[in-house]
Length: 346
Ligand SMILES: *[C@@H]1O[C@H](CO)[C@@H](O)[C@H](O)[C@H]1NC(C)=O
Ligand SMILES: *[C@@H]1O[C@H](CO)[C@@H](O)[C@H](O)[C@H]1NC(C)=O
Image 1 (cartoon, helix red, strand yellow):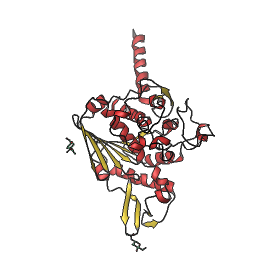
Image 2: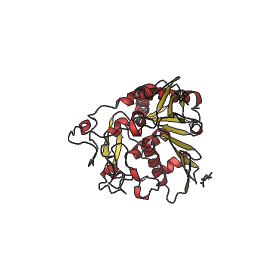
Image 3: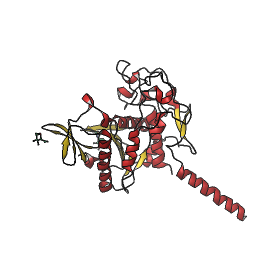
Image 4: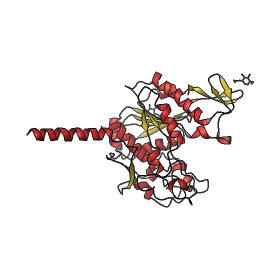
């Protein structure tokens, strides 16, 4: 009898420890599962043309049916009805660049498809878009804010201020869930670089080492989290680097110059190319924050998905080769599946 109790005790605690220690992000592989995709993208009214690969004529569909299988546990399937119910009356805001917009449009599609005939309205004030699912009072918002620190117009041109969190931050604060990302724009030069000057401390210069700038800005943002966030009210996430696929050598296919014609993920559990260095910088900067920030560490798992980008199907096949953003539906749906697990599955 005692032995049975002991075994039950052991089994219970091993299982408990198992769930608590399963890391969704570190090890795992993509598994083809014909019960995916989670929705029909042609019925989703929230996808911008650049991400709407099926509408733009992408001929293959297999990329829509892979789910992420972490080693040692199973992710619960995204359940939009459950999400809306548990999140009733609350708001989620996604802040960052166009990779955040991938996440935003995906979650809108996931929620919209979960309840037939769901009622919603949408508004846009300045850079902030909001969709409200009316019967649930659930608000999903997006703020296009690629740097998270201040970017202001001056008489001498646009100035990026690394030590001052974006003026918008007062609109971020009031949400129940916040998901940030900043990465891509720190490395833009030439016509794509939106600032002429950068201010660090009291010093204004024409340029700065971009890694140092990203780290400093994340430090500024982290101080804002520590001073302004109330962990009892708001759960803060940070979405790490989203990987691009512009060099086949990264996945042992040296003849591939980019993600064109890729219809399958890298299979197996090892990605040949290493992690992008900026992810390490992000983690280092975020580790200095005292209040809880949950990492949405999509870098490694997304690296396998050389098949997930729009490639030439980002805009009716006539414009460039996009191996940076992601098709919706597609990989961002799985980012949201992980988010759902982090938020709601004990
Ligand atoms: C959308 O719905 C919300 C919640 O009912 C309401 O406060 C808001 O005014 C509505 N916006 C528009 C543009 O109808
Ligand atoms: C613009 O440049 C001038 C000349 O360098 C300087 O005196 C002035 O303070 C600058 N203005 C701003 C807002 O930085």
